[in-house]
Length: 617
Image (tube, rainbow, N blue to C red; front, side):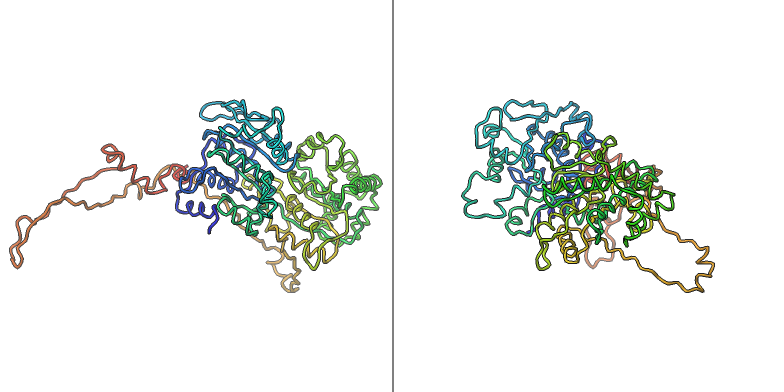
């Protein structure tokens, strides 16, 4: 049986899918440019929702989208679409409280750089406010009312009596939209299906579906990057609900992620950390050379929470005592090509080892490092961790255990340093820790958008085939780790499982003949490379005369008839043909009966306004 998104793809191929309404992009933050696959995600849902044959009531859909592909922006757009279609109450829930706080910031704080909506939301000529509510008992019918909670909090509220909290009464007589982020947590029952869980009527999944089924017109929107469709129970449950599929391998193939490389070494942990700091500073300077205001961040990954504080103290102290001699020794000791490239950059730009050490002492001092795992000033730290890209954010290094696993969005992360040297895989099969590390790398691979020329795509990698371009370092995430063959093999296996196949670019050295080196072609020749440029149609203002003035001949039955006598050589008098010539235009036919012209235009999709506009802008 085909998946739901495959059915919709078929409808798109035959030209009967729905188009994205203008009011959706018009009411989203203009700084977030919609990408082609995001347009497709919206169109898939709208096609499904407006199809009497496809859409089931209540309506449940799953968006299977890679980490970093903009799921939250899709949520915001769907809220606008469903508001337009009469929905006023929205329940957002997720497994982790920190994701709830981050999402509140994105949905409610119009001063945030990650705010999702435009300054004013205008639908049908009316200004629409967004309001946070704790329940749906007395809501504004002219506003978008959103209740934010955790899955556990929702479950607790539903089966316990609390003042001003959600209760089953909120959902009995009014339709609602449920939005589940990181929805793979919601499917605990579906995955296991043990007798105890089937008998349990108060599991998280049961609670959500109890609310979902309380009204026929309810909508459940689920979002996840890790839907385990290989599990037969999950596949059976979701094959008619996955409305859009854009996994990590497609995301990376379309160049919307950073390139990913491992930088393995036999260095001590402190030297491995220093190597990452040097690489980060080199990248920082390359960004500056091209007038890009991007501050690269380094993530230091500890194995256990109790080790994190000690690791931070060790590395901060190492930076404090850093010397030019230490930098020089590291460069001389390293066999890494990218470290050698950084070394050449500093030498060619007249930056001494002592100057590199001084810069690192300033940029990675204790004031510019933050721990995500201590309990001091948690709320403020959460804000700082979610705004690392902001110009006013001072942090260059983050110390944590598995902060990146879910819900943390950071685009300017370019180096992840593994501060331990253990493995838990067996017989070549990645262990639980290695799988977590692979997922962390996947989340860190979000592309940091920039462009040097107007023609370039801001949100996609640009230098995959330009191997010597210095800006390749600005499109690459490095995972600095232990050089142990079994671990590296297990890590690569884990990365392939989540859709990442590491860079297969191979550098080869070719020896040229001496006689060729003396040739003028070698000494003075040029290598030309073509750029693919979009063909502009801005100068097209009308149809070509050959098309506009073409005369179409049409034979029309007149209804005349005649009789002939068989075997009679005399021609029948009433068999003489009459010829009539009549010239007309489509406009004249429309004046007589517009319905004829309208039906003819509807038969061919090329006459749709948006398609004609692409030909004649």
